[in-house]
Image (cartoon, rainbow, N blue to C red; front, side):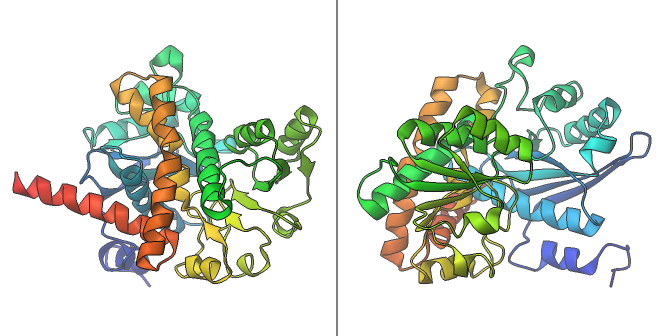
Length: 367
């Protein structure tokens, strides 16, 4: 079913009517010369210009790409609010296989579309895009972060993303076990790519017992060759069933927590870097009903957005690291709010973020 303009009706319903909608602006971008097809979604600018990465992915359909952009942009509003940033939430997706169609011409065309928004959207890296790509985009758009140090940027944001997740894990340990140390805890990491391999370093240094898996054998091999005590398992299905698993860290794509995985998960805690880990509403309650402590993904993985946001003010790594360290306190505050309100931590985080966005919107209207 489509509307009169040919757009999928379910996407328009999501945008204008559902709880997952409420976006301020959605831009469809096309440059036929380069093959660019992209979607830029701005969920909220109540706290400031929308900030979020650019995902380059071979979606099965344009409708799926639009839906993903809407969902990711909404998540960025909540992430930026909980990170204490003066930024709203936005996200862009480029449709296609980056291994096949990514080119300088395409990235420059994309940069022109972002620039046309006049600063309402600030872009950065995400799945399928890298620092070198942002350097190209920045040639057409000054509202580009995640650039290389040689081009005035902060470089790889995955370093502080991993650090923030590590701080979230420490908060989970403090809340559940009364001690923030992760020594001797069994931690399973699904996805040891840009963020996951940095997270392994933190955990190994502290003395955790680390299990890893990834669809790419070379990513796993890089970890196990560097750290002989890290244990590789065949796949995520095996990882979530590891006996005595203390913490499960989804660090790949979203939807890791669903009707199939939650019932068999052996971990007492879920705390990972992946976005949109909850496959659908209600999963957070399923986790709580099983006694599994869930650290909301958009809270603990905010280290990267803290880093790229700082580029706009003249990047200082130690300043960013200090702000990312506060994820520990923020996570504990969410657990306390959840207990006080009798709700899962994911709902508590949403309430806190929504209140901050509401207060900012009301203050703007009062001016």
